[in-house]
Image (cartoon, rainbow, N blue to C red; front, side):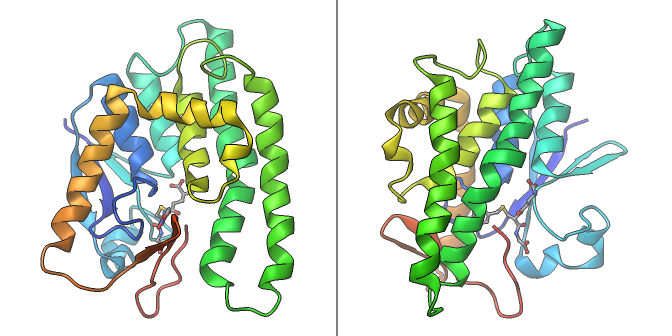
Length: 240
Ligand code: GTB
């Protein structure tokens, strides 16, 4: 049965591949698994039909026969376990690749998302300028640690794995911030991943969705100096 993924019908990132359906698309391209995409408006994401699939009313979700999943990490892990190409065969190496997935989502992503949220929601606050250096510093600490571990290697632990896929999608959120550029080996790591044919296919597919959504539409989210500032639909507390 062909699995179905949900994604924004009009992504606030303007097709830059930063929404979390991109991870799943990329994983599916890496393992050569066909899939379908069901596009959702912000309104539809908060309706009972979608809340039955995702308790927090977000994308992405995954449906495959009787199985329904939410959380991009769980979905990518599910794909990686069922199809060859994203996890090593050796049991210990496999466990380490999963550890890198958790590291990406649980250790590296939180300070990056906290910074993004502050830029998006708190820019007009009088204390914002005083808060930003602390947010930057927390990101920088994780980047330095990750950069030291990666060293001169191409990937985090041997061959490219779901751990790298997840880490790269987390680091991409720093585009335009100038922070990634402070660690040239991490910048090269992201570029290396983005050059993978599977990544290019997934990126093109999500971009095509955004471009189709723009036909005849004015306004909406805007990109400013390389960073994304989403315009939230009225009544929606967009989580990024
Ligand atoms: N932990 C969950 C997961 O990994 O699946 C988080 C899912 C999540 O945050 N989904 C977001 C969502 O549905 C879309 S990806 N938000 C709507 C809501 O909560 O109402 C996050 C995202 C959105 C926009 C940008 N951007 O504009 O750059 C980047 C990432």
